[in-house]
Image (cartoon, rainbow, N blue to C red; front, side, top):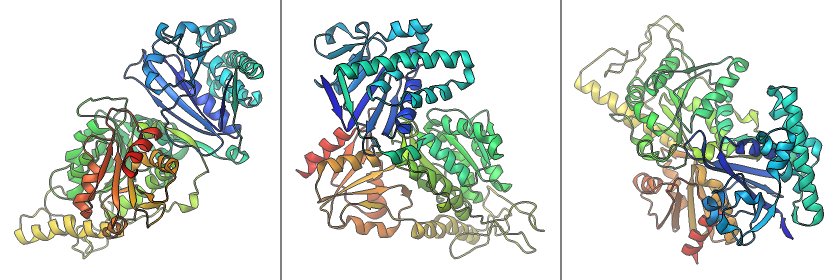
Length: 570
């Protein structure tokens, strides 16, 4: 008998079109509603049909938020899955599926528990029910209440008509009864202690967290051109457009998308555009316009591996330098990189206040791993979200680009006040009229690139420290690496190792340097050169002693980070 306790990693694999994500969705919701902590993420090939896609679902008695390499239970929907994930399998891995979906080379090597998934699907009416049968099978192994599973299945297929709903409920019941049978016979056992508090929590993906945060921050306009892995935020906003009274526009290209967002801000809206690295590259000229015109804009950039098309459905933290230096000329910008769903919600909301206050581009950096991951969490506290407007009335004598000590000029919008409001992409005087005066040009350049940047920098929040201030080793994470590093450090169990997490990536508050004094610094990031490590050196003169880098298009696993850190500290 194979038995798993406390924390189980389930991986389902099949080709695009076999409904792997449907199983993931049904199981994640069922487990959460049953009181289990749940985490799910996916990896998929760049194709509409065929190939091999997998999803990992962790079910635990404690909060879990990170990807693990370990596979406890593998459910293959086609041949080739075992070859694809063989480096993640161990002698303890149980393969739950049909013999025909296991390559011959693995038949004598793995613990195969044969289950007639296709037969049960066909008995229901079609092979299309294979995914629902599988969801029922795994739910049965956990002995969850079938009423909970049925409710989730009904919700998932509610738009398909009552006939389809009944068939999927039937399919899930067949799988569920088989799972209970395997459990009762002692073939496969799963024992995880549920937590009643989890039932009152929510399941949230990175995509949803950014989208809901933007809505909470007052976003009322979104323009975009589809580009994976960022499109989910735009489609989420479109689905909520009528409910929240917002405008969502799919335009002809990314150049149009950002210019439309700039125009919306100029008119008084709170606008965002969502894209990936290649799309952002097209936006760089308009980003520079935002810098010169001191026009607010919020950009969500979900990173994927480049250069060029790269690996369009995979993950990387490779666009930090792109957003740091995009746009010709010198002008400030703010870069945020959430590491948790909570941070994604609150930072996406705050991005609009920051853009409004400082009149700069604010870029929210996520990545494919982050937007496609979800887990349970307590409901965000809406009382923590502040809605701030920094618009003045254009009274007589109003100067749009007034020279100020902090570099921030009063911003009015057309129609609010008597004076004309001008936005200018040419160098300009305080009123916004074009100028080529040398002395005034110097003052305007310093206003934007020096004074305003310093104002933002001194008001930037400090990174979050996990662990002792007196730790010898300081492990640095930024963005989506937070939870995997956090869990790896927990496995180390050493009090002399602390974690410093950055979700506000640029500009860095000078006070941040004190965290690094007397420490051996280890930076963990998902790119080939260590872009954030370089930024720490440039901004704070911090010496990074070790760089833990991964750049194969896959996210870090807890095991990989654990081994890397262990190699440094022991």
